[in-house]
Amino acid sequence: MSDPNDVVRHHENTVLPVGEHDITDGGPDMVQFVDGDGNRLSTNAANEPYAGVVEAMTPEDARALYRDLALVRRIDAEGHALQRQGELGLWPSLLGQEAAQVGAGRAMRPQDYAFPGYREHGVAWCRDVPPENLLGMFRGVNNGGWDSGEHNFHLYTIVIGNQMLHATGYAMGLQRDGVVGTGDPDRDAAVMAFTGDGGTAQGDYNEALVFADVANAPVVFFVQNNQWAISEPNHKQFRIPPYQRARGFGFPGVRVDGNDVLAVYAVAKTALDAARAGQGPTLIEAFTYRMGAHTTSDDPTKYRIATEIDIWREKDPIKRMRGFMETKGYADPQFFEDIDAEADELAARIRKAAQEMPDPELPTMFDHIYADPHPLVERERADFVAYHESFEAEAN
Image (cartoon, rainbow, N blue to C red; front, side):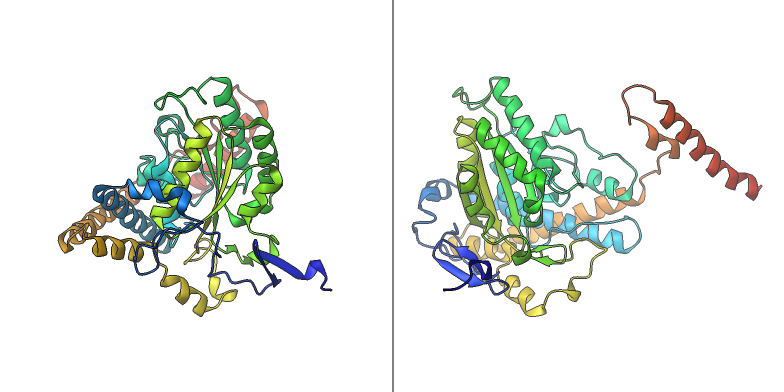
């Protein structure tokens, strides 16, 4: 009889040795509607509960989603290029995860609230956060850069997993405000909390799931399983996939193909509808892949192999969506050319904005640390100003 410590559960009916699970195969439980070439898949047990959502989508919906995918990828590429040119201090790329973020972001209603980590540039786009604001934060010239109340999109959270507790608390607040389960689609609201697979190992994440279930909170936990937590593979983080772990907390878990924007949208919409109706939380695991580095300070060639990337390149979300649209006749070549031209214009706009952002006055970093004046902060401000003025004195 094998030692249970020597296996990792890949999906319900399969156990594989630790370190040998297939990170390119989401298993039979994964919800998927379009394959890597854009072919529409037949309805099966996994995707049947969500098929109605996809069937109700129009050609116009498909074109809008493709536009989102293409423009989000261009924003990400520009952020990476600007960092390499010394214009940004850091950039966490979402390359390969566009469908996961766009599908989830577009499933949200205006009154819903999103709590991101630090890679959710695609969700920010769907919540109408100007991409220039994202660049400003990574350039170090603003304190987040957007009004979270205006966009219902919280500021980025660098402390991994911390946003899950924020999201659960906010969702419990929605319950107390009486905007859950009223039956009014323009009033009922839900929360979506985003993290990566690495975030599932954090205490904050697990505590949030406990609170969410006990409170029956209207929150959807959205885990982007991109297979790597910085340089650590999944088998060093968990023994069963994130979507199955939801069961232990007492609520549903779903694995969806994170590179299939139609599938992600359908699963996210269904989960959010349930949360708004008062049916409690859902955990969605978007099975995807981080094609680039963890951030621009990381070198993934040190810990993963090129063939792995080649396999996932064939699952590219934009290639897949374009193939689906061409097969269906939803768009002609001119449509794709126009989107490419729009992406070029967007890139030029945000590049110019980033390069022209004025540096803030240095002492302003001490503002808004406390609601009221604080003597320690004031002393630190004075010391900081005096330190920088000393260089000016030496120069003169």
